[in-house]
Length: 186
Image (cartoon, rainbow, N blue to C red; front, side, top):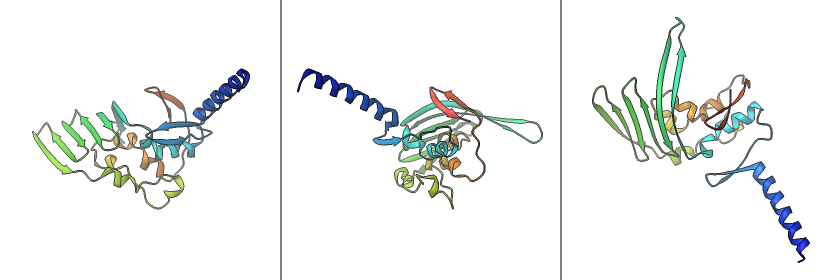
């Protein structure tokens, strides 16, 4: 092989590699195809449906505000730390509730009452096998991500938006933004 052929094949290999990396993202041992047009609502809903497969840990604080019909606001603060697929911690300082999943058990601690309750945690991997992976599979029943069902925090369904993606109704893309160096859509 001549020097020219070696350089040409190296450059072609680099270009091909860049193209492949541009179309695919490697995460959790799976090759994930990103939608061609990420402004398409159904493509975003599809990402929501399987978003739990695209990250392995997450930590943060969320403030959820409900605007009540009488003009009052109800504000809930949740601190969370999650390691996929089955370990998590949710802390709601205003209620004194701490909720911990260690992968085998769930502990709900009430600091205000100095009590705790221990539950056996169902197998998350087994429960995940029942989740739909395509929007077309979500017609009849809504399936929630297992930890979103058990965590007593309103932010759980936003961290695990599987059930939100399955809801019927009208969806509109209002804006694109960035949060914690990640693309987000409103």
